[in-house]
Image (tube, rainbow, N blue to C red; front, side, top):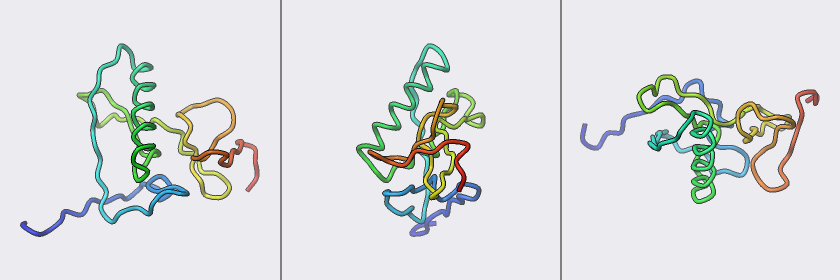
Length: 120
């Protein structure tokens, strides 16, 4: 298959999680990167993974925060989301950690915040 590219299907991934407001448009091919690291507990691993993903997104804005997932090293098929992903009134996506308290918030400084009861 020299010269051919393998097409990776992104079916089921909402477009706003691939490239949110203020982010470059999604590329035609999608890939994932798996990073292994150690932690004492799953809670510690979640916190560390969120820091890694947030730091990488600062350095590389094309990295999609909303689709970041965490799993045990030997159980990739049981990966869980790291970020909320709730969709706001203007189509933005909440980039706060999963199961966060309070209002949802979009990416960026002074970005939109919204609550569960807000009508749109």
